[in-house]
Image (cartoon, rainbow, N blue to C red; front, side, top):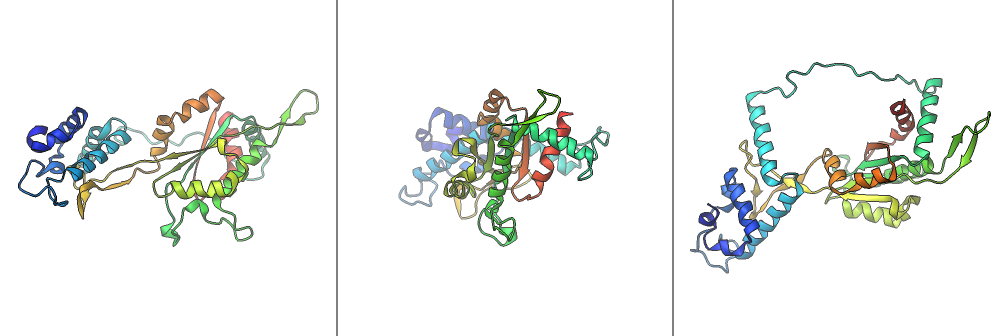
Length: 308
């Protein structure tokens, strides 16, 4: 089927490329290769279906998209077709589940219980067993700001960036005093540990985030302690049949979009970061959003509760 659709263009591609084309055709993506077998147009016409460079460019993009998603483009398309079909049929994805309120702890701010859990969380973070993950793949257009959101000032006094605030809190945890109980009266022992900090970026934010960190010497956390994991984009869909959408002004390019915040878990795994953290003895991972100035006021107590 691939050789019929591609015609003489078949010779441009590797066996892996042709295998990908065959799989895409079998999953409703024939439109990507419409006209590829035609030789009626001039090879020198860059807008023609016979342009070898354009075909190679599209194929290269398809390979990147195929590598970026677990299971490849076929899995992406299959999942999309299933979800679109279920939506069209009104299928309830939660059918069979019974809602329930999970058990937990109510911690009024400043209460003795809050302080106990907070102290326990501080000690655990200070021991180097907690890692932090910031999801920062978006820009601030909705706020009337063209830059990365983590560069926005979180207050009007220092005009310090959100990213600076986060780094300062993490640094404060790792340089805190750990309580030991070697005597009847607990004492504080100064020690230095390092909590790893991962930041998920995107094509839109990666370079600016790296620049902000480098210009400010990583806000005291150190280059080796901060890891940037860049989120890849996924293909846009053109219709309810999950056909991949081509650019309006360029039929040799698939429209793409960020994959969303949920992508962070797959990235942590595929990058090898989770394995590295496990070897370091990390027991808890704190995930937080790019513009949440209050989150670290609750993090120590939340860690303490999770240890209970």
